[in-house]
Length: 308
Image 1 (cartoon, one colour):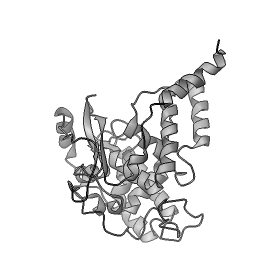
Image 2 (image 1 turned 90 degrees about the vertical axis):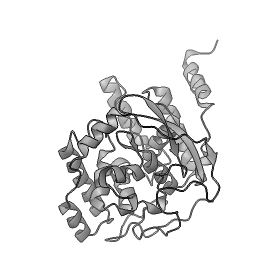
Image 3 (image 1 turned 135 degrees about the vertical axis):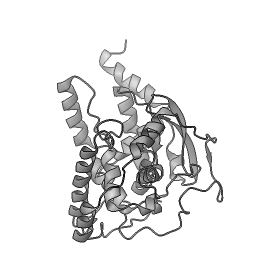
Image 4 (image 1 turned 30 degrees about the vertical axis):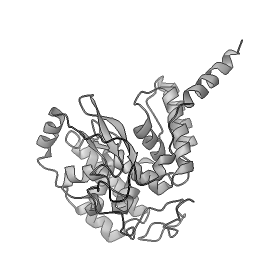
């Protein structure tokens, strides 16, 4: 008879055996289909990759947007290998005290793995799979590719998934044209765009958090003092969008569902211009940032060469 203490590890190993491959994600021409949930609880197919007309390649995403989510969601993003051991320990301690699975301690890589491959159930088994997939993603993908995937699948409103859709939904512009204030505003919604950080229910809370994110951008040297002051003084023009949200919630969307495949050059174009432009001057780096940042630029080591 197998000792009881060994049963759980064995069961866990069996559950990890069928986890999906992540290597295909390294190919920027690759598209696949995941299921996303609307605010009525129904699931719909969603295309991840260039076959999605709202897909936004990394070079068209402002560096302020990348840094905003990194500093707000996962400040150790460039230091960990997919999961944050200290954050997990603190989450376990908190959950044991509360006797629940409330605090997830998920890194950006874990959130990306969950959004691409896993369900939303809150179980220990799913959490272990999430950590394992995040670790594998860190072995196969660059940090820049992970951020690109994350920002193209993250939920930002009622059936609003990805920065390409979010930028047009809230501000009527492509992601490349977002201002620092708008970047901070979208990043501020990420903990809970449905309830806690829904701008139509808790606008003041979202704006307050976006102010905090702007301060972090200034502290890290992503914004200089003039850019920071201009961003803090900027007013967000989101008036009248409540009606749009109500309409989005009441009418379930219809997504095209092309089969998962690798794309060939010249296949279905994205909404944004082709990914041929050079990265903006203030680009989030591909690897660990240096300790001391210049007054305006992110780390001097930017960009780090792609993994071979």
